[in-house]
Image (tube, rainbow, N blue to C red; front, side, top):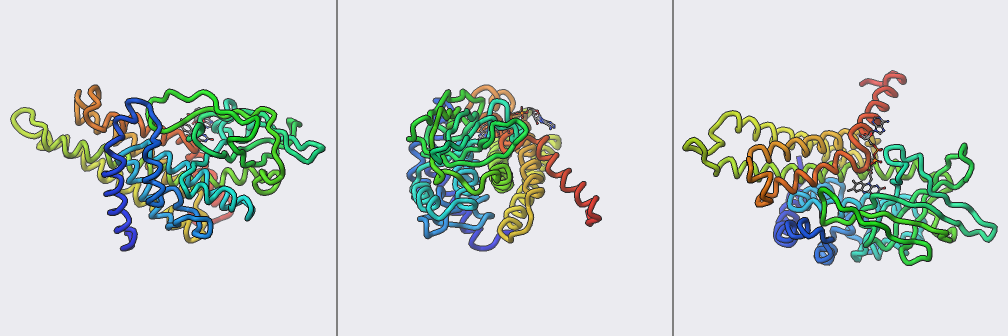
Length: 385
Ligand SMILES: Cc1cc2nc3c(=O)[nH]c(=O)nc-3n(C[C@H](O)[C@H](O)[C@H](O)COP(=O)(O)OP(=O)(O)OC[C@H]3O[C@@H](n4cnc5c(N)ncnc54)[C@H](O)[C@@H]3O)c2cc1C
């Protein structure tokens, strides 16, 4: 299933994540503290430049390997998983895919050196309905853009040195053209708002962003005027692979925890794993995780092969996130009271962390809409289903 270099990459990555990231995962979650101390080691190992070409200081790898990296990070620390996924797939990718040479030279080398990028699509009134963006960018007579609006739920918002943000470029309600901009944190008018107190992923950083009378030049515009919505959807097609990989890694962590516990915990004079009902739970966990893994790696391969993969990454994200959630819930069940209420085992943290995977980058309902749209298009065009 995996090529030799991908198997070796997994071994190296697992060892790094277990040694450098895992030991702090409990504390970061408990103290709700951002994983600052992980950024340098993650950068040194190339995990913040996995999609960036060498000419911009990156260490690019194929998408299957990238998925493995997010999976292995999430297996030990969901907060590290989401930070990597957001920076690479949502921060670096749009600049790489739609940016000018100058924009790539300006932002990607800094990103490769460990400065985080963020992605600002969601707003208070534009979540699933991302086209409902209210942030407004109006072209001034001076040639500058005047930007006003707020973004919510932005991963790495307090840390990122720049954010790729969507905005409407017309104040006429009937004109819905959306354009993306790369907005610098140190520019006047850019401010970071309230940091969220989250159920899970508490070592990651999620906050509001505000743009108040921000004036930026044409050099901040990403791609053509009106192309922003398409760009964001294309970015999410790839991002969903990494959220699926995150759910897979979290589910894998919960499953390993449950399998070990079930083999050790003795009730009625024998390990609970001797009960067939427990064995069936473990078997279902392993089977569903493996199926999710196949979907994620296959959508990664399709992306690398340049094939249309949007509906496939939606399937991978939908399935992996629902499997991850189910596995984490069953892991807690197998651990009994100690799994739920003590924090002694990672299953409880994973259960809180993995919920996001059913929400971020499109909820499960939105993934089903994406998949159904492709099915119905194929029917209409007489394509094989
Ligand atoms: C921890 C975290 C990190 C995030 N990071 C980022 C980030 O970095 N950048 C960013 O831009 N956003 C980010 N988000 C936002 C995330 O993408 C949104 O929360 C998500 O898209 C859902 O939007 P919403 O929360 O407004 O829910 P809503 O859109 O209000 O949905 C509420 C419910 O209604 C359902 N629903 C809505 N429309 C339909 C429909 N047509 N059919 C059926 N059901 C429907 C949804 O499925 C959901 O169950 C993050 C969110 C979280 C929690």
